[in-house]
Amino acid sequence: MVTIVLFFMGVKVSNDLTKSWGKDPHRIVIDEYACLLIPLYFIPQRILPLAITFVLFRIFDITKPWPVRKLEDLPGGWGVMLDDLGAAIYTTVVILIIMALVKL
Image (cartoon, rainbow, N blue to C red):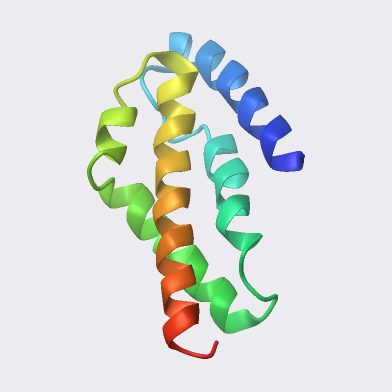
């Protein structure tokens, strides 16, 4: 529930702020906070899985593999939030595969 509330608050706040700060300004971080929670729901609460998940999320958030980069082109707050949601989905899939292959 927290993730859903943060996500839609992020759309609203980001939409308002992009009007004055420009497209996807780095000062907006609610997108990272809201979306990083998603893969964290699927991992054990131990330091190694947490660290790997964080690093994977940052890699996917920065590199924006296809089609995540396309999501960034959506208008206003939707583009700000959905590209991070895409990064969270990639992170979730990869960390689940890692956990299935290696005992973390």
